[in-house]
Length: 359
Image (spheres, rainbow, N blue to C red):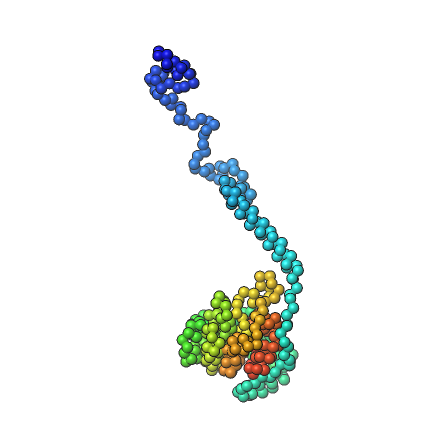
């Protein structure tokens, strides 16, 4: 043998690729078979009932984050810490401010004025006075108190005064059609009607609405709506009104009221006043003890927010619904400046005030 090859062939650890092997093959057939310590798991997972992996919520979470980056774990840890801080902070703030801040800060206006700018109400007042004088105290409470949400034929029902023949009143939503009723028309939204600038169309829409309400046995329609005026574009009920122009709102509301009440159904103008957003409009919403307060100066109140309500009063509207929110840090339904001073004294309103359930 060539001496130069002796060093190579003398190494018994090297495999020979000469044709002199016992089986006459260049390769050992077992070279490519996995050894016991190199066997890989099958790419197909075992069924759950054959798996020996631990089960349970903790094990699932552990497998979920197994092999994930440190960034993922950092984000999860940060989110958990933030949740702890917010929870603890919320508990502290709730404990500190669980008492509602003071309300009733708007100027008082007493006694309640009688109102009156239209002689058409005089005969109604005379009849009402005679009837009330014959009522017992429970009957007076009955006719001024609701029986509860949908505890009658409509969303709102009053109690009767049986001894004087005064029936229950059925008060039903809403501004765009009869709520919770079959075979009722879904009228175009107020903002769509306002965009027509057509007074006759506004009147006819109200008339058709009143006819349907009368046919369903409804005494009081909880509409039309002119509040919110539309200060906030994202206000949840802007579309119920007739637009952001107080003059347009007032004219459209007046025509609608005439159409409704000519059918023997009482209309309700709402929401008085400055109900410009849906969030935080009620107490204890999102944990806050008081509803939001719409703080408005005297000029803005008269020239913008209260303007459409004056047109409604001039049209002879039977009812005004006060809103959930506060106005100048007094709840609208408990605000003598609004109800006595502006609505009854300045505007001369002679009808009844309806609370926005459960305002």
